[in-house]
Image: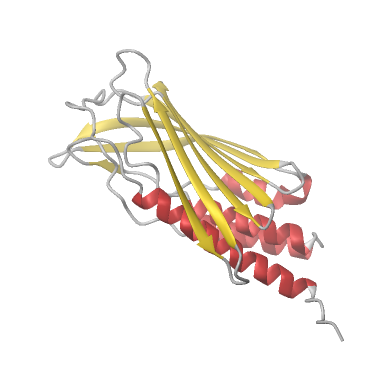
Length: 242
């Protein structure tokens, strides 16, 4: 007599566990990837308003995607240890498939409390800080709304995994605001519960316009490959005069 096939709940639980392991690997790569030496004499424009934009794109299994863009009015201030970036959210643009309307609405209204101030050390690198819990709480409320509306549990499980990508990518590249160009890639194999392996790849590209004292554009791509599936999450940043 053959082995009984696992139920949908068991498959979903396994998939979430496997994704969590992969995403933990992604978070580790993002946090621990070696950075190049900072540009000498980092000197951002002090007290001058600038517009910082960040877009996060998460691909879904059906070919659709969640696209979240937030724009902040920011300014650099000198401190004894380096610099402090103060900022305020000025716009939120969230695109999501109709079943995720509740998640999109919560994201549009989320104030991003805890993002600022961003502290930079004397070389212009971001000083790591604790990640705010408000984002994960908002996702849980949106998932609960989706369950109440009868959304496909497999779809909701995928969104929960996609939200975990955001958690793993919350720490911005430490060299994000530095001028000049940078390209780096890291890859890591992760063992899965059934003995198979998944792979996480993280790539970062950063560039500045000629003569700019800070980063102008940057992009980070996290690719997870698991049991024949491939998921890509992208973050892009831009920094321009306000």
